[in-house]
Length: 211
Image (tube, rainbow, N blue to C red; front, side, top):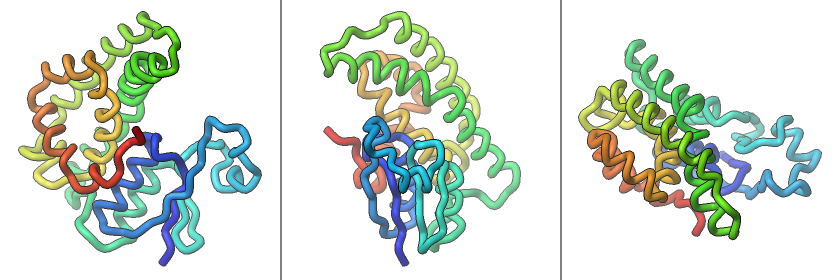
C-alpha cells in the first residue's frame, strides 16, 4: 500500500488530510509542493490538481483532490477508529461544521488575522489593520456559531473525535498564534477547553507547522 499526499507542511488543508491519516494510523509520504512557487505548478502537478491547489492525494493509483473528499475517503478506506458518526443527524452536524469552517472560519482566522498580523510582520511588511479588524469581527461570529453547535463533552460532535475537529484545528492553530486570536478565544471557554485537548493529540504533535 502506498499513500502519498502532495502539498506543503504550512498548508491548513494539507494538515487536515495528514491529521486524518495520523488518526487512522495510516503510513503516508508527504511530497512537498509549494503552490506559491510558480515553477512548481508543473504540467505533472496540474494533472493531479487542475486548479493548481493543494493537497492532492494518491492511494495505489487512486487520485483525489479537495481535502474534504480526501479525508472522508481516508476514513472510509482504512481501518482504525471511525472519524464520521453512523447516526445521520450526528453525521450531518459534522458535515455542517466542516462547511462552516470552509466558508466562514478559514478566511478570517488564517488570512485576515494570522497572515496579516504575523506573516506580514515577519516579512517586514505593513499589516492591514482594517482587514485584521474585519477578520476579528467575523472570527467572533464564527467561534460563537461553532460553540452553539458543539454537542460533545470532549469534542465538537459527541464524545469521539471526528473530521469536524480535524477540520477546525489547523485553522485555530494559526489563529491562536496571534494575541488577538488568544484574546477572542478566551471569550469562548468551551472552545478553549476543546483546543487544550486537541493540541495535545498525537496527530497534532506529529504534524506541526514549520517554524
